[in-house]
Amino acid sequence: MKQLKKALLGTPASRTAISTVLTILVGVFSGGLVNEITVNGLLVWGMIHKTTSLYGLGVVIFLVILFEVMKYEFDQGVLNFASQQFCEAYLRSQMLPELAEQNKKFLREGRVEELREATRAVNNLLNLKVEP
Image 1 (cartoon, rainbow, N blue to C red):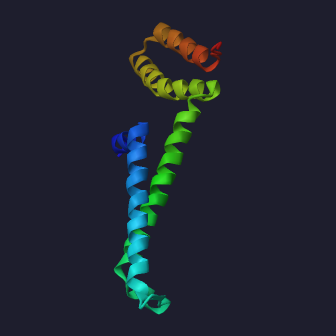
Image 2: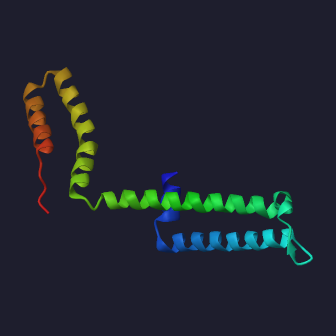
Image 3: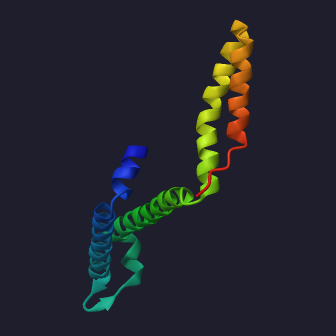
C-alpha cells in the first residue's frame, strides 16, 4: 500500500494526472446529471434521485476527497523530515530496537564488557545532538 501511495503521490506528474482525470470526471457526471433531470428545457429536481449520474458524481467526489486526504498525509510525512528534531527522533527509533536486542544477547551470553560498551553506545545515542 505504501508503494502504491508513493507511486500515486510521489511525483508532480502523477498528482497532476490524477487531479486532471478526477476533475474531468466531475465535469462529465455533473453535465450528465443536468442533462438527465432536464425535461423540455426545465430542471425537474424531483428526478434527481433516479439518475445514474448522481451516484457516479457521488463516487467521483468521494475519490476526490480520498485523493486530497492522501496528498495531505503524504505531504505531512515529507514535511516531518524538514525538522531536525523529528529526524533525530526517527533515527533513534530505528536504531534503539536493534541495540536493545544486541544488549539482550550480550546479557544472556554473559559478555559483560561488550554489554557495558553497548550500553555506553545507547546512552551516547540518546544524548546525541546533531549540529546543522
